[in-house]
Image (cartoon, rainbow, N blue to C red; front, side, top):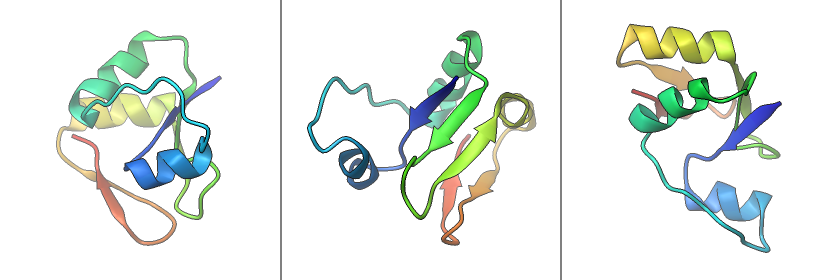
Amino acid sequence: MVLPAFTDEKHLRAFAPQGGPVVKARAHDFIPAALQGPFHGIALNPGSESGAIVSREGLELISRQGTLAIKVEDGRHVEVW
């Protein structure tokens, strides 16, 4: 099971145009919370051209490493810490 995560509202609305409950969090807070859950990773911008899967192991590495960026398929960088 992966947890969907979005870099901005545009990607969220493209994934779920009907809306629904949303919690906004900075990656600094989101990653540790995701690691406390039963998730195998996160789906970053699922269903979009800039989508990526970050495994639980990847999240653990990000959590330990400090500031870095994840390169997403379209060449954009998403700061995660």
